[in-house]
Image (cartoon, rainbow, N blue to C red; front, side, top):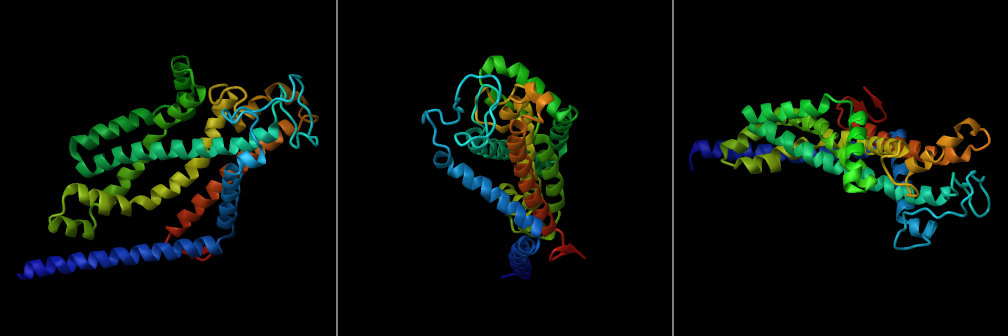
Length: 320
């Protein structure tokens, strides 16, 4: 065996050992940060609470029509909201939609919307950003111009405009809202992935993999993308709550979930006509608003903790 081959194998083994130590170091840091960082524990508790509520929704609020569990039952057709009572612990909204039922099943809607939009936007943006960074040249130029084209427009305004255009064609307001947020949500991930990959692809272990003759697709999938994953995880954790909040805004304006659907934004939309008398009808805003705030807060705190875990200056519960 030649000295060059021996040297290459040695470098390869060193890079593997470094990768193992890096993964182990990050794993220990994540455990330490979450364990010694009270806000992180609060965030985990909040998210787990909503996950349990979503999982037990059929038990906590049994649907009257099992084939359409997301449709909120109505106790009557009286216009004025009714205060909390024994039958309706959270009261009712305009049109007598059950707030308790809407909030419980709305938890499933929030998790479904947040995870679906974030996952697909990350998949699309991450794929485009990876191709741009790895191939470079005119591929990168074309990809960046496309990203800039989408990012130049105000996010919520363009999503709202697209919802207005697509709703008459697809006849599904919820699907339209999700599509609109995905279309205008992926550019941020594309830019973040591209920046991370441009940094990672020049590191020694990538150069060693190329010297060993690894194909480009393997280097991209096995070495580059996994080592660029951590910043994406931080942003994605925060974006789950942000997307749920934005989708609730679309529902409030009449372009998200349809009337009577178990969605927190739709519940708040039913409170619009009663804003001047919220001092006597406080429950119609308090419960859905509190659910939105806590849901967003939980994922934001987890995102902050993940960011701290990636910061080498973070020690225990503070920054050194």
